[in-house]
Length: 114
Length: 116
Image (cartoon, rainbow over all chains, first blue to last red):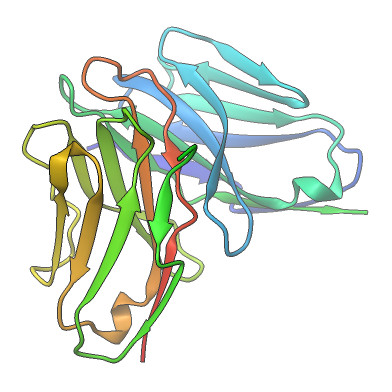
């Protein structure tokens, strides 16, 4: 059974700091891994999608890496801003043949202080 | 529409009543998911539809919960005889499915259900 864990559960940093969020999964047989952002009371916004054959993806100040063999992904946020404050969720898509189900971690709640 | 649309955005209902939540996925997306997020909790998988295949209902918490997907598009999640513990945000997502598994999933804004 696939399980996804995110560490830390919460993080508070001063503005401008670079930071790393961690995601680990127990079954390396995944189709892809996706990072989301969730603002309070809102739905999920997709940030980055990494295919199982890829090592990393970049979008602006965000960089996500994937080490499938060790079951790990990191989300790197450069030069953090107060607007980055949100909960960050990772999800892996795994399953048999054509029934890939998204399985989520519990999230990391980030606070960036001005 | 351009994104996943859910309705209503908020629903307050009395304990014991039935409720229906609706999800309109992105046009052409054959995979559709329902998740539940209770206050301060992570996302709990409920049900997954993929094209014409039998849905994966393994996450439905009780037989009071059911979901349908008509014509491979719109989905309705029904909760019968609602209980206070059903209060949560119900989120729907869709993506291209079938063999196109390496694709991005998109979420709606959710329906906040409050059972009083």
